[in-house]
Length: 347
Image 1 (cartoon, rainbow, N blue to C red):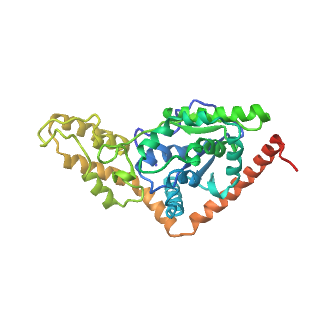
Image 2 (image 1 turned 180 degrees about the horizontal axis):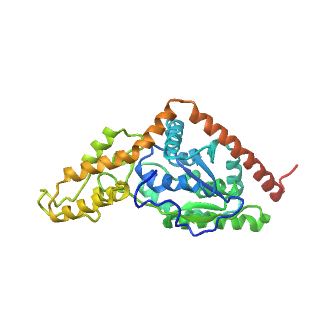
């Protein structure tokens, strides 16, 4: 997958270990994937496969922390998301793709971690209160929601992950996992590996209406959208609200249409020309959006082709996650044998 200003992992300064260091990352299956997922996660997941032993998982138990009252669509979204992963270039021959709930050892390690971690550690997580406020229509006063950082820690520690790919803003969240592992090891010895952040470039795109890109706002371009749908959505994009005619100079900075051009249009000369004429009031929004839609569809078409190949064999995705989960569970079983020995739960 190629797009401008989303450069992959070549900026990572951390050492590559031999044998390959293990990386673990996951996504919650709460809806269809959109361009924000592509530039924020998948754009980094794919090149990581060249350097690391990658474990990518469907975080369906994490989805339950907010979607527990409506679980019907979760498995469908899970398989649909993995189809998008494959289309984006995640390779089941080079990465382990699995489903969290198919590896029940995650729940056991989560439980054991919960025995030693003070509740105030979890209450101070910045996103704990933020998400309760943002999702005020849902009752998030549950033990599962409070404890999700411990489940995240179990997800990573289960596989002796050396690195977790994160953006700068996510480092504090990983630091809690590191603290949890250190506390567990203080009680039971050096049984769990303390994960390190693998700093990866994270590009954030606004939604079509210049708000945060979110399915709930209806302002996304989905990875599964066809060319006509992408073109239609681009035509609806928010631009400079002060520019009511094409001959009025417009603002490029912070303009979603140009942010998308920067991310997806590989013709830099065309982008520079459009920006210059836009600032001078010499180009209309129709031309700017038409060229954006063309560039985006050119970038997305190889992914669409790979997704069509996946769709032609509907059982393949399920086979991949079942086989990947079997492999993941073999490793998880060995980890939990070690953990049980350390905790001295042997009879």
